[in-house]
Image (cartoon, rainbow, N blue to C red):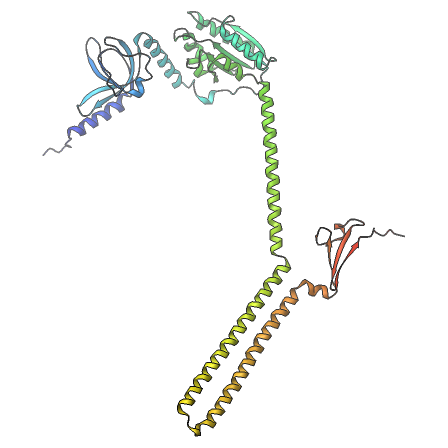
Length: 446
């Protein structure tokens, strides 16, 4: 047997697949489509070839739904794919993630290469982004002075906040000289340093139309700009290098104008929302205070002396009932013993035993009476002790010693003269009854 590990075919294919997937990652290829098939599953299967070689490819449904072109035999396409192995057959193939026509694809490839380069250089890093100022009074716009973008920006600012001043730094936004124009306009805006925020904008268009905003030199200048910048290039689905480099990306020129302005109606609506939230807060606080007061009122009622007296009275009743039940049990047991002795006497009935039995019976009766009297006395003493303890804690006992309880007309106990106003009526509870009184005005010094 060899010393090296022995693979099965499935294991070998799995290992090769991992090596290919981890070693290559995503790659871009240009090739011609042949043997295209689109079964009912929605997936696409085809061969990508050039004049010297070919490779199998698959583009699954979740990816081909986003494709901008539908493959046809003989079509030249640019694809982004991952290299893998179809393990059941041992074929290595491409899993296509993105497909486009090769003509536009080359420009897109240049865009992706520049994007990856600038991202690796840190130009897109969030920590380099500046926040927009809280207060914006003057806005600079780098765009064509006759284009639709500046008209949209001015219309939005006029509607939302007419007090904002707009300074236009004119530039071509399409064509061969557009990249240099944009760079010159940006440098002029930085040198003049007269605006609070700077918008770089134009309307929608194709990738070729927007290509000046993908210029590498302009991207570096925009990244180093000391002014907060907003990129508003094209429509919402359009992305340029300027969008990634700028501090803020707006999907449209109109959206950029909304970012730098505050709608007066929104401010009023915000104030109304804050007022509503404040009212809700005070309502919750009032409900909480009411619930707290009710809780403590219930606690006070549970600790009232009258309630404790009721509980002690109930305890006395329970003790009395237990004493009565004990006496009944004792009497019943005595009667049962007497009945038992009587039956025994009737069973033996000798005349000579009658006298000692009568004596024993009298002794038992006396002992019974004595035990009953002692038991009754014991429970009476316990009852008196409980009653005395109740009287000691009773407020009525305190009143009987000459004290009085003073309450306001609302039933509140008065512990200080300051709780009553002059000429205010209050009630006084004494041992023999209750009467009303009026607080006299304080005596003046003579």
